[in-house]
Length: 247
Image (cartoon, rainbow, N blue to C red; front, top):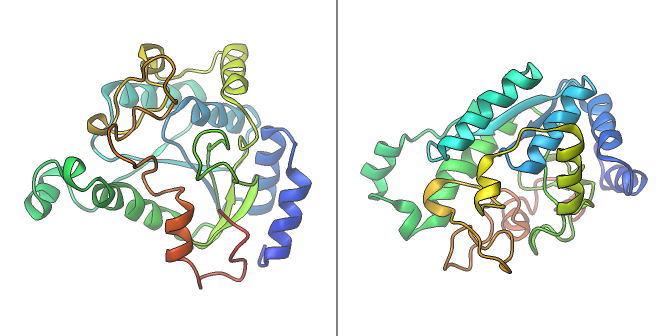
């Protein structure tokens, strides 16, 4: 898939199709050069279930920042055991102590965007090298940046096709799938954490708040940078023949 037109045709053809259909299309078209990046949210667990249930040839990894909740690490192990697959750990070049030496303690409190760049965005960029497509678990109703996500789009920032099988799903759709298929999810969801990231940057959400209100609380920041449309447009403005198609 080399052109904006091909990406656009695929996006139109797959819009409204089931996540299983979208994943099957991605595996058929890109395997073994297709990967899924999971952060172990409920949506990511749904996609893992679909990959395993349909025996799809999809590589799977997670960004291990070194700051995940203990419950997240436990879920990681449980999912590997449940589905008989390996979820690769992709880690930053800098350990937490090395980051503190270079940038000071608790960088996430002072310059969270820089911390996300070091511990998430740069590792993701390295992890995606060598792949032709990556699968995410984002939904359009999660944030403003994600509201216009297409089922298939060109990711100019990372230079490959981005596949969003759950783009059109709601939280209710996700929860229904989890119940019906008894998908393991993070127990923190039941404790007021609808969106779970790194421990220092994630707090519980009060009734009536937006699902991601607990991420970087008190700041205007709502994205770590992995799915930021503005950042991607700046970073990848001349990287791809399909610029303008992706999100």
